[in-house]
Length: 185
Image (tube, rainbow, N blue to C red; front, side):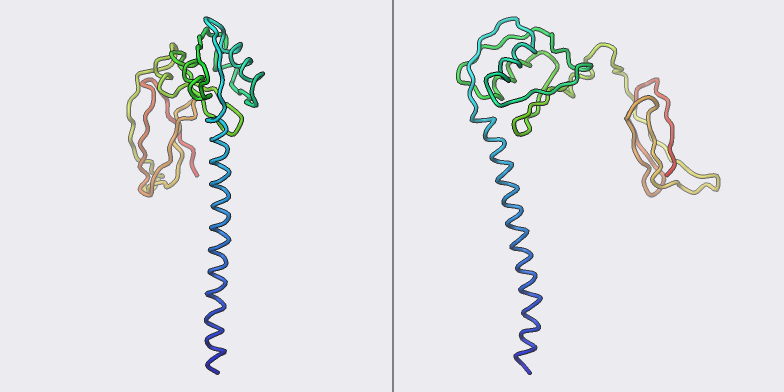
């Protein structure tokens, strides 16, 4: 009788141990894949000397001589801007940093794909972008005076928004001439 009790206690423990081992193996494989993807970008070396060329010309040369593909939004990234590069046996990171220096753009490498995008710090220095911002805080209540939980508060015409907390409160940084709108849950 005692042996069956011991066995009954061991079975759930073995199942739990087996599950932990499977999760550990899966996690380890995921980490290994991430590390190998970033090391390719670091191990790729390039040499290039181009002065006062458009960004698109330089990126096409890199694409032609490597396994990297560049992506960008034509409406937001002006790839006809002039840039210069002079590197010898440089990593892709070093080359892109030199190409995109003083352009207001930055990059993100995902496996063998490179995303060129507007630098978040340069958005405020771009012409035509509203720089005067103010912080707005408030409480949204229903007709009975009860706070509305989870209401969306959005700056009209943008994707800038927030959600009210359990007490109906919200806080949001918006342009000084912004109009807010609420979307009830």
